[in-house]
Image 1 (cartoon, rainbow, N blue to C red):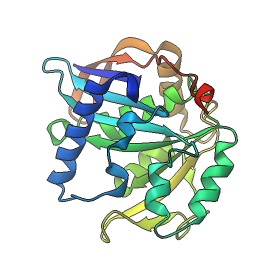
Image 2: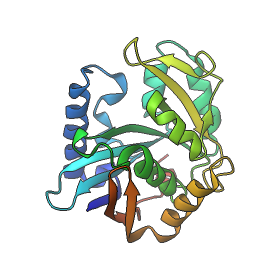
Image 3: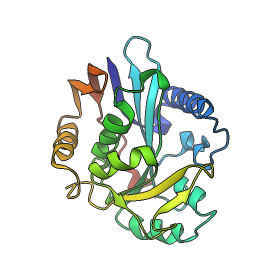
Length: 236
């Protein structure tokens, strides 16, 4: 069984540490030792919310993602990364942040659970589902090729206003990344109908158990996506 837990980063330092360690281990497995958007200052950022996936038996964090809410004092990871090649990223984020915007960042998945569909499928759904609790008008992301298709199925579209029609060589020259945006995370008009139903279910129930099914078969998931301390606008 897997436990999905959503929380504000500064409220759960121990969980954040597990996230950092797990993410670091995965990057090393793929030979990536320097990635701008993987620095760990986010653990002290009051505008970061996290979803972790733990194994029920060991409590090991085996997958995770973060949502960084745009704030002038806390540049988004993609602002820091993309600005090295395209300064238009700053105006793009500024325009989206008028209605509140957040970046889905730091998505990772341990090799020990690859094939279950936890990261690219269930975790992205969970990240989108908590966006409405935070009253975000849009979501941004910089995604690798393997997460582009599942992200588009869930209602994202390619953000062509930066890069080469939205594409970048990042974080190594042999890896292509694409900038994407979800302009209506509440109604999900561009999402596949099946994906919209699943995300809406997560959003409505927040705390429940469910039997999920992936390429490796069926498995149980305990979802706890109810956030506390959601009034980030009070800190602006």
